[in-house]
Amino acid sequence: MEQLESISGYTFDDAELNGSHDILLPCLLAVLDERGGKGTRVMDLGCGNGAVTELLHRRGHSVVGVDPSETGIRYARQKYPHLQIDRGSAYDAMEKYGQFDFVVSLEVVEHLYNPRKFAATVHSLLKPGGTAIISTPYHGYWKNLTMAVTGRLDHHFTALWDHGHIKFWSYKTLRQLLEEAGLHDVEFHRVGRIPPLAKSMLAVARK
Image (cartoon, rainbow, N blue to C red):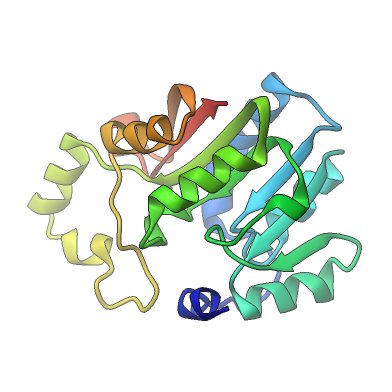
């Protein structure tokens, strides 16, 4: 529980989708449809306020959501009482949930002090042949250069945001993280803006 308390400071104001979901969800849903269709079992790891968990449920998936945020889980349980949404973290033992066709984790890995433990958890939650879909803010040469030239680095790196971003991933480093955990066939999709200045990227990898 000590680990859970140390990472649970991220708070929510409601149980609704937000602007980042407008960018992430079309790609996420396309990958889910392409690789499994409806009715698959999905873990929403870092489910926040449960809004994405509910969307996946309404699209016919069997979904479990887990998140360390006390406020996120409270809002999720109030608005979506029919869902299985538990308070916990990617650092916890997850054997009780069994294995899933998909593990979805949106905008989580950039907040974690121990991303290798997160990646190991993702691997353990997947069935053989299952797919991980992990999103995080995109970083590449042209985007980083543009932010430097336009004075946007302070805004982007969120140093004054409590419980904000502490890891800044590239294709190379995120691929290495996932492959070290035993995932393979890693591919990337950039979303938001034109590709060189994309807001986020989704890594799709298979167990």
